[in-house]
Image (cartoon, rainbow, N blue to C red; front, top):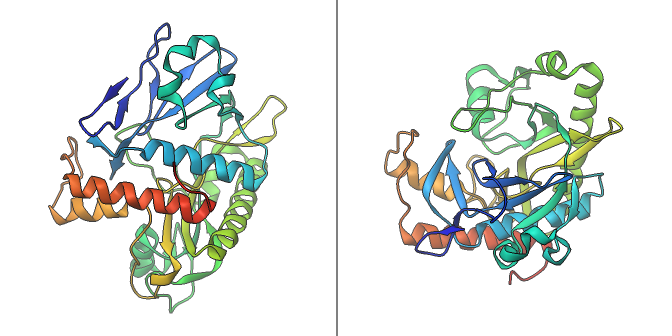
Length: 300
């Protein structure tokens, strides 16, 4: 295992296993029947992995995903997150894996990232200002930045390789990629899950402006929820107490890091800069607050 000076986990390695398949944040080990998903403390912004980590970020993301998997009640890829139930080959790294990993079933992933938007912000707001649309969906006039949308939008994207940018696709393109029946199921399920989570979060003082889901299909072909779920990395969380239409409230997610990178005129190309200690510390606080507010549990 490779940690940085702040004891943030940057890379994982397990004796007896080949190197993992690594994403921006997660390292995935093939254990045969199942996969081991390890959530590192890496942080990315604008599709660039930064050279430093945020201590405990991986544990927070993992714990939030576990919370939502339980809450949403949809069939999912989780086998167990209890390291004491992991295979013997992982015994030497149990302490490193505790709290930041889960054993999951292998599923055939659907090659579409499913985004639900309940509020008009980010790239959607920029598109709306130019053309009155979001992902080619025509909207009424009169919306402002951060306005609550009249209905939840399904705005899928392609799944890009690391370093590339996801590309927005419309519903017709989604049907062409996965078929009409699967496209309809993705849309309905995405909106349903988002709405259930957003209603719950609002009761706990958090607005989920938008989020991304990923799905797979299990052995019988049924849709299964996979990967991270409603985390600060895959969602925009706004404290309800500071929400006001017309401007983006401070987010309980990595928007704080994006804002800092913009403040130094980062060109959004690798390599990324090392974050100052105060930005790292503040980001850690933001992630922990998101978990505690949503789950009602103290982060240990």
